Image (cartoon, rainbow, N blue to C red; front, top):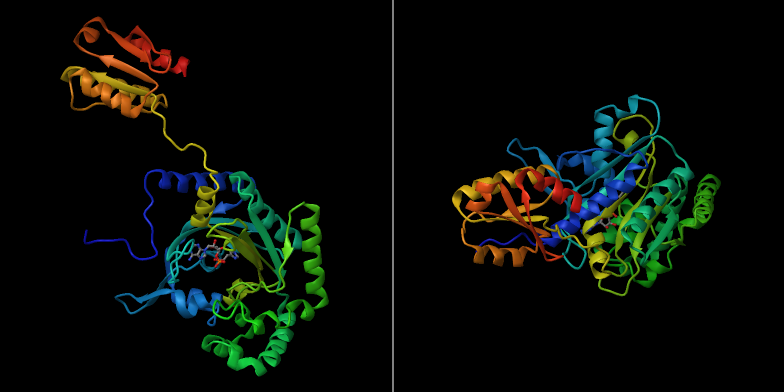
Amino acid sequence: MSYQKVKGTQDFYNVEAKKFRYIEKEIRQVIANYGFEEVITPIFENTDVFVRTSGDTSDIVTKEMYTFLDKGDRSLTLRPEGTASIARCFLENKLYATPGIKKYFYFGPMFRYERPQAGRYREFNQFGVEIYGESSPYLDCEVILSAYKVFNNLGIKKIKLKINTIGDFESRKQYAIALQNYFKNHLDELCDDCKNRYTKNPMRILDCKVDSKKEVLVNAPKISDFLTIEAKEYFKNVIDTLKYLNIPYEIDPNLVRGLDYYTDTVFEFIIDDDNEFKGLAICAGGRYADMIKNFGGPDIPGVGYAFGVERVMNIMTSENLFPSLNNDLDVLIISLDDESKIAALKLADELRDEGMYVEMDYKNNSLKPQFKLADRLNPQYIIIIGESERQTNTYTVKDVQNKQEIKIAKEKIINFIKEKK
Ligand code: HAM
């Protein structure tokens, strides 16, 4: 076979495609009760949309974006995440013009040039939410609660909520100075990327995939020692509210997240199961105060998260959490000559209009291959139409499970099966 899928991408077919849609359906159901409206944005954006929001020292911008020039020499990027695109859409379409909090969700593919491994792909799907309009610890908790409800609804229990605050602008300003003072004497222990981050954005060092386990990072100053009174109070309210809502959490003082736009609350739901996915974030997000303002818009804060749909699928498969996703066949119509095939086609159409899943044989006129087909498809009912059935307008209906067979007038068949079902 000369064509193969691109490294880090996946095909979903048969039951895998059903699992994907099952997750989507369940998430949409939970989210509907929170009043989120769907937003569908383009798969690619002007590159600047991501550079200006994710940050030019983030891994996403420096290493992972699929960026290309189009035929008009414009720099475009396949979206690596949804938050920036939704903010661009919110601003461009002046969705802030009407009063009130705005709650949005999105579902779709994202692209990052990462090293493919278990649970990490180059094309993956995110379900995400973004809320604009209020800076409130209660809203942060409602956002976290909605993610928690998604997990509950899907039956996923082996997860851990890690949460932290990275403070407001003033807290981070002081923290950046403290980090630079600290790392000044440890530069030779850092990777080349981190040496660059040291001058441009020292907080990014804490999120480095290469250096993360080194002692020098573990012992680095913690943001909690540099929070302003307001930022401390804000985080205390978040934590108190989580306790009240009975949402288990763990404060992780090293959690800073890999994107530059965050302020105050940041969180990740981590897989806490003893398998190859242990420790991977399955949903992550936080608050961001300045994205809309930095795009040149009004001063409107946001908060949100995104689920990695493939990671949800991975953990649900390994924990056996999917219900049966088979589309059980209601009726198979067996037909014994060409005219009966036309009658079968018509009857199938009428039964499908009543919401039943119906199949028929399009080729064979003898019983043997059609009963073989029945063995394979395992329908609940088999209807047989042949010349004598057509002449008497009475079809044979077999109830496969109860092993019963009766002859019924053609016009009564639909009601008969509907009532039985
Ligand atoms: P993120 O942490 O970069 O945040 O990604 C969110 C989730 O997407 C991750 O927790 C993970 O489940 C999934 N994910 C990320 N990269 C991959 C990958 N290569 N393969 C499979 N799954 C992956 C964001 O994207 C933010 N936009 C979230 C957010 C929304 N913050 C505020 N609002």
